[in-house]
Length: 403
Image (cartoon, rainbow, N blue to C red):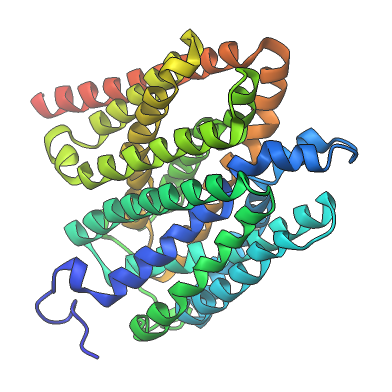
């Protein structure tokens, strides 16, 4: 099979590697948010279990714990032994662990299966991100990453809507959605064949491009910290929205599915336009726009009556999140030495899923203590400050260029 990067690049949409990696990227959102419409039903089913409310909430971010612990290890393995075998075995494990919630007998065992699902997510996400850095560069990489967010969001829309329909029948049925991951296997098997060579450590030259020779570790730390904070705030949507809608007296399963579906759909369309937005605004102002849109969404949720603005609010949050998330991976892959792309992918993945895990642990006490509206108002304020900080960075950069 010819390598498109070695001759004349074919359009991304005709590159089988890109198609396979886009399909694999949808597993990340399937892993967590898919069961959100079923949370209230699962909590009712296991009401006799101690701490059922908290344990049920933790079903959504539980895979994140395994990812946090294992993603850097998976990255090192990908650097040493190759991305393809990890990606294939990770998808197989994803299907097995994801669908086991259909038949496991109790809440603790389901929670355990979610932790095993996180092992699969760590492997798949790390190998897939490293392959993006291996196969694509420059504008093609940026374009692919924006497409990846779009594919993740459109896939999430489909998965969440389907899960919402199934949750209306039984809170167990959304676990069947994880079986769809098996469709990725033939595409990955056929398309992901050739990998770049991995030289011995002593033969690896120091990276000089993009200033990565001595300070790439510091750059990755900064990107990872910002990723963690952003995901922590955003992940209040799949973890708190089911209970927020229930507190409003709404049908939790249908309203949560509609709201999260709107969030992912608008995020997908926003991601498709990210390339042009980056050209027009630059990186810092794109961050500012994205955080401002997220702040607007949380502000609308806090203003009430929330049922009348719920879909508009989640649309703003989804679009804003789609404008900021691809930039973290773009910055990380630019800073990472080629021989450490797997490890760096694992570190950024750890930051992303750390935010998912921390989110309900931080937001649930606030939601119980001061109420959902006040919690959303505080989140709005934090995001507004982040937007203002990004705008100040942009203005400072323009002044520096003028001087």
